[in-house]
Image (cartoon, rainbow, N blue to C red; front, side):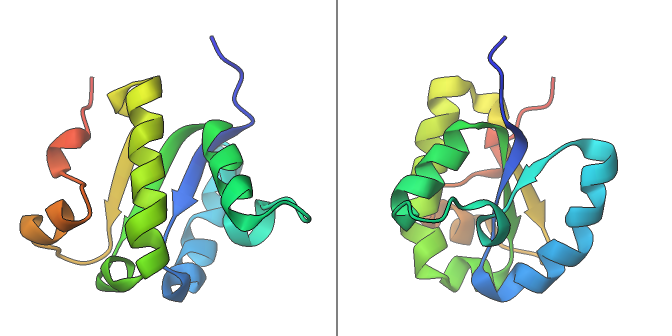
Length: 121
């Protein structure tokens, strides 16, 4: 199969960074290598390019879904769109949604995500 540099690329609102770093970074010891923009964006590359690049190098894409995520315009437009394109190219199984809060379905569909996207084999 394809060689991925990261096991997962993590998409989250800026305001959820602390939660992500506190809870997901420790998982790297057991679950593999995650890609976080805060830590892994290559210096010198334009932000957009760096993100697209990192998504392509990741086996899965994890969304940390909170109210803050839904309000974060950057996550909203750009990252979600790219992640979905990426997932479609690779295979639908590459998207994982982590809900930190109860988010109604209609809010998810506003950002083109659906719970049903996440198929488990």
